[in-house]
Image 1 (cartoon, rainbow, N blue to C red):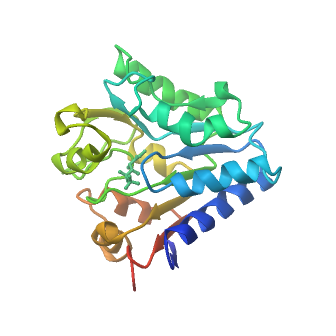
Image 2: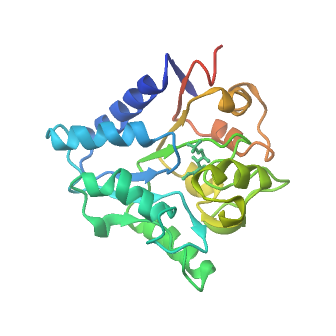
Length: 240
Ligand code: F6R
């Protein structure tokens, strides 16, 4: 695992955008795995700017998002589909039909998850997966537990995650208690992975990721078995 420690959030965003941009230069029809949350927003802004300037092209790109709240309508302003449209897709020349976000309104979550896995495989697998990290070490919505799921699945969110995500909702009762998420194997099958972290509230999770043992209580630690992972964080999130 390579670790890039940046001075601040802006640098984290720039470094991450550089890696995504170089991926698209090397393989214009790349399959990207994408994350929502606060952390990748800076990177998405830079990528949108680069696309406007003609430096990178999303025309042939396919994307798969890590997760979606359940239940949650795509039109809801806190859905991850809405987030992706607002923060990236509407500002770049990606073909919307090639963007895949799990449906938060499906009445058959099991089928939705199985179909999602099949679509990733049919696209040739994820070339570059972008991840954030939860304060509790979650990746996607794979929460710390005594066991983890391999494939895309419906999961309960932990109290810690509900608390952390309540900042986006009017009141904590509005935060969905479940989500559909890629599983650990779905993520690990990606050819390359970058994981972004910023701020002191991520320090424990990032330190555990880099220095800790592999444990299902720290889902991000599973990334240690992958041979092409780059952690991009700022000094507040990791100072060693
Ligand atoms: C989002 C996701 C989550 C976030 C994590 C960090 O799609 O899968 O694992 O990456 O909760 O969120 P932020 O960046 O808001 O701190």
